[in-house]
Image 1 (cartoon, rainbow, N blue to C red):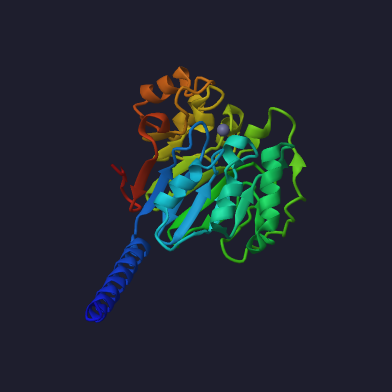
Image 2 (image 1 turned 90 degrees about the vertical axis):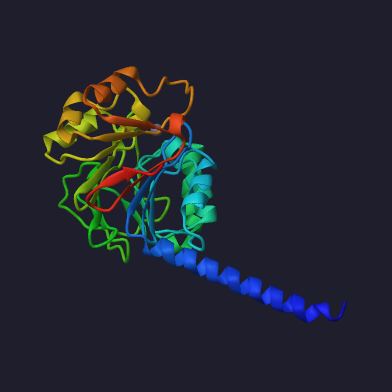
Length: 311
Ligand SMILES: [Zn+2]
């Protein structure tokens, strides 16, 4: 038996070396990948969208529960547990309910929220978890139209709503110059029923490619954006409010003329989402419809000129 020990040791060293090599190779391949990746996470009747460029990850909404973690674990590169930016589009449970779990499992370096609060257990849980995150001190930014986040030289995330009268303002991922907010201050309570219209609306642009993420914003916001001239022709639309008929106005669709639409929706949900009227509006315009209740998580990649759906 004693003779076997050196052989076992050599085998063990070879195995460890091989594993280290494989890990380094995968990490290098992930960080070198020069495509923008957008994943509509399958989080049931809720929203969670992950945007990835090389080693930068932005999570827009965190679903309502632990489902978001499964998506993040499968999507984030090995050895990368940092989300450079998390956006909570508005304080409803199906958008922020999973965020405290995200804060538990991942390092979040910036958080973007609309300037409204909601007196619910989910929002209180978000506040508590944010106040525990030392890295987030002074890096919780109140969203307003005109802010931009530069993901790379060529990739930009612009806040279109909530609409603000203020001058355009730039919030960088690093060293944000925004006023520091304590987790419990600076948010005013939204009156009942209007929380959806405080949704952060984001335009993602990478050279020729663009995508619009509208949270649960209603037609009122869509038409306001049209009126102030902030809409443009885009490629991909994350359909507002899970395909509810309160969103996706005809004039809005005509202004942005998307080719592909993403609908985040739970199977057999009690709201009847997506609404048939919305589906018909999209079909009439020849817009491709990708639904999370039918396809699970959906990923789109772009090189800045073309985009494709990852099979
Ligand atoms: Zn929602």
